[in-house]
Length: 264
Image (cartoon, rainbow, N blue to C red; front, side, top):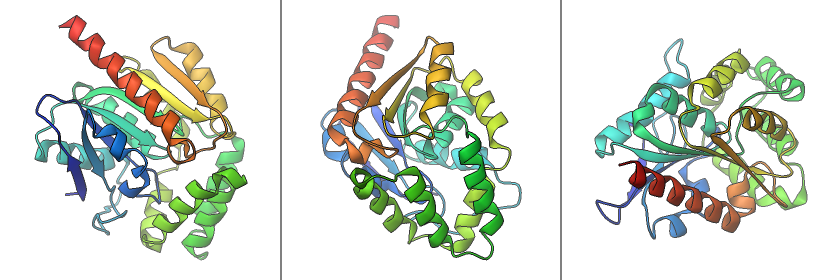
């Protein structure tokens, strides 16, 4: 069982599940907890090998599906039938995988710093990381990735937050997570097609230069997807601009909740 924390205010309040990115932990949501727990039941999860979750859970051939199944195990443990899911960075792939395999468990997806396709720059970066992962210290690679994805001075807080959390990992865990990115683009393309029925909001920092173009393209093709670009922030927009991130997310959840009541 993954390590998790809950903040439950009532039996009738909607559940919101937070899924962090690779190298992070549930602590990266520290600027969201106070605001969300006012009107929502909150579930914070540490993905395998991160935070306080157990290391060494990998078996040969494990995929994002296996990672997402572990999140479902937590939902079953605390008896949550349906939840809104907020993901960040690589956590958005886990969130979309859950929506793909368990659509009946997902009320909406809010995808911050969403990764739905790797362009040539990102693919070269990942290729270099996989090639060097066995002989270059993982923290050196992680810091390099962090600076490339979050290069500006105003990204410093979010960059340091993820680097500091990544220090709690180990080389083997980093290698396993890196291996999940092999042949990733076809998988991500299928996810976009399979989750169109799930209400989805993309929240991106306007300085998230590596990942914005694919988002703009997929939103143009799918009327059910919404996209908000947050000014003056980078990839980890929940830390760079927490007030706006919280406001947009909570408003979207409220809209989805109202819509579901009307349908009933």
